[in-house]
Length: 222
Length: 222
Image (cartoon, rainbow over all chains, first blue to last red; front, side, top):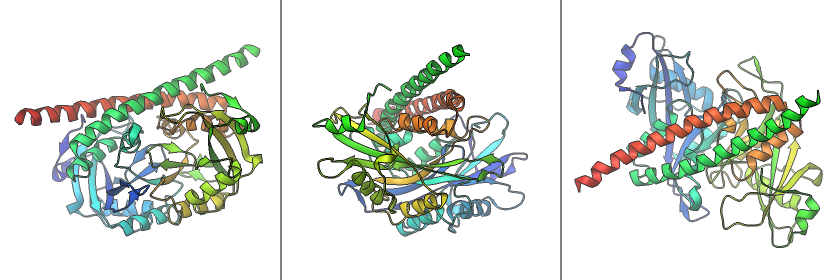
């Protein structure tokens, strides 16, 4: 959002910047949920070690390897399958709002690569079994639902989760850029997502009040 | 929270009630994240078809099968591995706040079962490949981080996601009941989770403003 977009070349010219490369892998699919809701596309995203959702990838040092070679190496560790990413898959580079105050000057490079449905399934199986990072840097691989069910189930619910850095922005940008959903669908999904998100807020506050209520008597008992 | 707890027998006596059974599968582990952060336990949860996080399981009709037989059947479909659940694994039954206005009188039955780390890995692999529900009712299986990193990464981030029904309540209850974290850790995690959750709120609002801003000019152009 508040992040400044820049070209790949401009990004690489930044001395002292840290570089993170991530990729959205997706495929087409003819599958239907419950035999009636078209799934249309399978998009892969990960649950990261820090409990946030994020695309596969990681930090790359461009003085040691190209951005794409570094990203491909990260993918191998996280997915357990070789998915080479090239300059042609590059979509955008930008200064990203950092989630921690210490990590300044981070540039995120975003790639999108279309693969076959068979490759998606190969990735899912390997990521959950043979991949080096499984259970360590990666807590699991999930598909992003693009449909919207009655009550906001599907994409709206998914968008209400917590994402790392500018990942949600990258996702929304890619959904529009590659015509995976219409601007109208996206807007309706966001409206719904905000409603679902508000429920979590009440839920968390109620739990906190409950645990605080439990703590006070035990302190008084001492 | 507002849900009333009742015994398994009381729950089964309710005529006209719908019954949902879910299980939290977990194991111990000696693994350490980055070789220094003890992971302690591996807890499995799913990304559901509706884009929300939820434990494995589903609806069971007690006039046709026992709750535990129904749950074991659901697990077979979702996990691709036979994990029999018995009455001894039953933890709580309660009227759950329903996420949709049409589905009234829902009773959720919650089970917790400890398995081996090897079984966890077997489940993860099968769930992402051979399980019937993979890519349909289940979008992926993830592990829940129990540690807290600097900045709230780990359990706090995870708790800020969106969960189905009373799933987050079931999780927090099980974490305390089985001594997987201390009440103090839980309270600190909730405080952190609320902060992380607030960031998402700003994020979603900003995106909505942006898409609305984009839509208006296109309408004026007509």
